Amino acid sequence: MNHTLYPTLMKKKWIILFIILLSSTACDGRRSTNTGDSVQIAGCWKGRQISRFDRPFSERILFTCRRDSSLALSMIYEIGPRSRVWTFDADVTIREGTMRWEDHEGLLSKNNDTMNVTRVDRGGKSVWLYVRDRSADSLMTQLHAYTAGPYVYEMPERRNDGWQCADLAASGMDKSRIIDLIEQIRNGKHDDIHSFLVVKDNKLVVEEYFAANGKKHGRFITGLFREKVHHLASTTKSVTSTLVGIAIDQGFIRDVEDPIYQYLPAYSSLFSEDKKRIRICDMLTMTPGFEWRQFGVSDDRNDGMRMWNTDDVIGYVLQKPLEAKPGEKFNYTNGVPTVTGAIIKNAVGMEVGKFAEKYLFQPLGISEYVWTSYPDGSIETDGGLALRSRDLAKIGQLFLNKGLWNGKRIVSEQWVRESTKERLKFGNLFSRWGYGYHWMETVTRVRNREVRSYFVPGDGNQILAVFPDLGMVIVFTAGNYGKDPKPIYYSVFEEFILPAVIPEG
Image 1 (cartoon, rainbow, N blue to C red):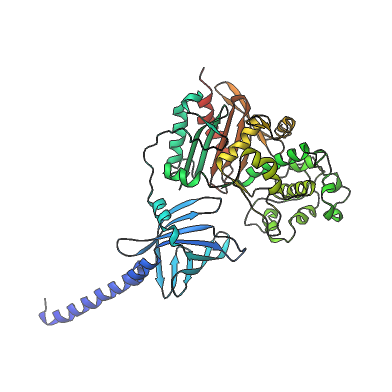
Image 2 (image 1 turned 180 degrees about the vertical axis):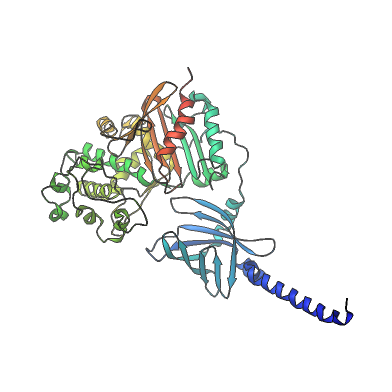
């Protein structure tokens, strides 16, 4: 080597090394956040959307400090009725009072205890307010760290809520089949299942709760979610239908053959002669004939989404033109059951929630529920109800017992029979199902036996299912939104649940 060049080469090496270090620091977002910022930000924050509606706080997020003092987003817990939990290890940067993680950008207040966050997702941009929530630090940290041990079946706990409980083995069911299903749920095989309950012969024999695609399961998770109401989506319609039956039993509504215009006098101008033929039974079977486009959430023509942007939801539905004669064409819609809610309200002279509380929830021992509304105040009788899983199972048991709960008549046996009867037929040879008054019906063949059931699925894989011939009620709640819930009905029930009840041979 030419020694006269050595100092020059060494100088260049140091310059190159400095540039590399500077570049790596600039590219690695973690290094832009100092230890003091990380420690101050770390912990639980609760957030609510402020760009569309003034909603209550709906989620908690957890920031944690890594060993290298960098900041990470570690968990999101949806504290609203959808109850989803996500775990992460996402980088978080803080520069000049601005926090960034994934597709979020938050502007911190001077004392670092609030921030306005712009979020970008499939629905576009939204603005959220996050507030530091030190009271929930311990809960969020515990939830984040919690991992499930080996599964051991335990009999559901008696809780003075009207349920008798029994051991699964004593029910006569094949315990191994049910345990295999629970292990699959714990392994994420069925995505984000939140609860799974089995009632056999009037006794609760299985009650399991899960979070984070099944990864979190056990006594801590049960304690956290058992008393929490869960969003039912379209499974709500089973309750709406039941309330119509109770209103008839109580004399508030004469008959399902009644024309709906008689119960909606404020909208008389919207009822043409053809629309005056729409009956309550047409509403319950989704056959009033309205022109309606429900699917495609991002489609501006989606009437289900447009309902959220009108100042009169009932009027929006009723002004739709008819594309079929009432009673002839099935068309799935959230608008029609919402109008049914208005019919109930006008017929009984009280809000739907109050009517449900007096005539259905209180008699069943249901003390906790949430029933959300559209911006104009119309109750979401199409899909806005949230109940605890044990309480949802009571609706199924009520129907299994032909309208009785613990010996007390709540809805007539005639209504149970009429509302669960197949009135429309759908599907094909392999997955045929019928439709009644918002209840679906199917016959499943297992071990050379045909088993009839009726059920109400909801978006996200919410399911309430009743098996009259087996004396069984099944409840699933879940967070698999955007997926058709019926496939889980056919696959899980055929592979695990029904073979656990029906013996071989």
